[in-house]
Image 1 (cartoon, one colour):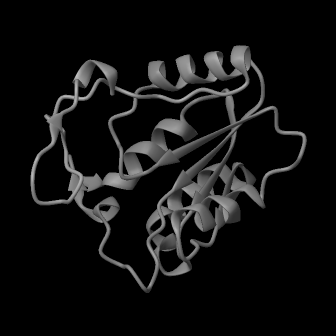
Image 2 (cartoon, rainbow, N blue to C red):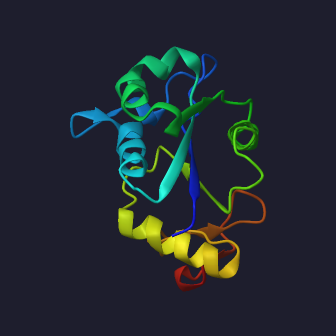
Image 3 (cartoon, helix red, strand yellow):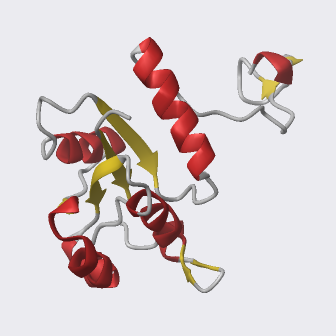
Length: 153
């Protein structure tokens, strides 16, 4: 398995401190589920957690246990800025980089391994699930023009 570095985006910042990443899910904050999953995978050689400094004490035990394998980046003004800050801590020699939103805690090891394998084969990959909601299209925001086919989304 190739060296893989994961950016886990938990862009809580002083300017937006009420994210779902801190909500309790089965006895721990939502963000911990993703962090622990990636740290538990031997093929993930480094995890960059994008997290404001004021929230880093929440993951201090993981930092102590994993040392340099867990690094921190500061969140940016927008999502893409947070990703850029995380990428700045990754060397140019990283063959694969996974970007994960820590507000999505239900990813499995199997999902991650499949995406890594697909990215290694094709150069990039995205994990997605079929859409379950009914989605309407509106040209003016007031009237429904049509219902989109879920099978195409």
